[in-house]
Image 1 (cartoon, helix red, strand yellow):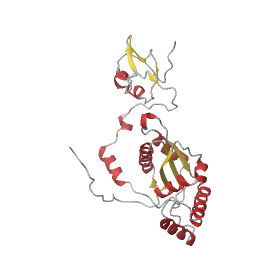
Image 2: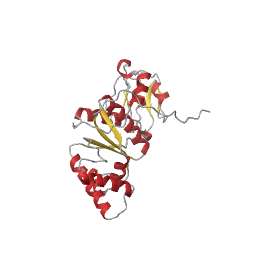
Image 3: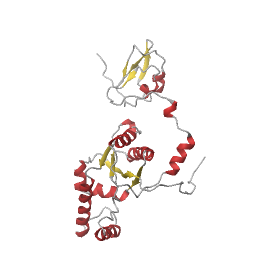
Image 4: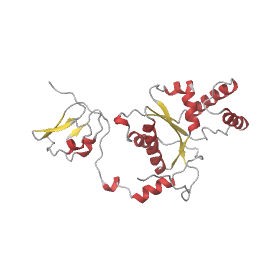
Amino acid sequence: MTLKTDVIIDHELCTGCGACVRDCSKLNLELRDGKAVVLSSCFKCGHCVAICPEGAPSLPCYADVPVEYDPATFDLPTENIINSVKFRRSIRAFKDEPISMEHLRLLIEAGGHMPTAKNTQMNRFDFVQDSLPEFRELIWSWLEDVYETDRIMPIPVDVLSGFIARKRTDPKDDYFFRNAPAVLFIESVDPLDAGLAAASIEMVARSLGIGVLYNGFLQRIVAACPQARAYFDMSDERGLNACMLLGYQARHYVRTAPRRYPSVILR
């Protein structure tokens, strides 16, 4: 009887060094007759693939091709990373220019490679760009209807009334979308999964000249709007846990903004 597993070990390549056995968090590998063998099904974290010096393990269930480690392209100076974190800004002014498909692909690649609980990879990324004018109209029409009929609102009524008044005075004064060319919603079972993916996407976005604004109001509105949920075929299994306005930055910042020292406990 052949054991059905997720990981495949190429015994022609395996030298029995035991690196994958020692690194397996599920204790799902062992050495037999000088070769690594898989004991049962796993959650496919890929550590065995990443650590094997010979490239013997593989995970055929994934389409992603592992990239060989190269310090010249993988390692970043710590000071550069810290400065990049400090320099990030919430961007509210965007160029009237769509994000290129290549840049969108890189953003999704960044989000898809962040950790998720037990490597479930249950995040779903809902991008709106080409149909954003239609989607924006859908949201504002629903908000106007909710406001006029005094139904339960996803944000405070005084806040919504102010935004609607501004929009009626000037149709271009769109507080929720801020004339961004694209919006990204991240659905996830675990909010932390979405947060980690969003942070990774933002860091890569900055390197591409793309600014990001996390929009909690719009997130709550879309989560509450039946038409918006149907627009994306949003799952009840996943919650809408991140909303990011995206676009090439229209303003250039020349230094970091000051912050208070963080609250820290060290015991």
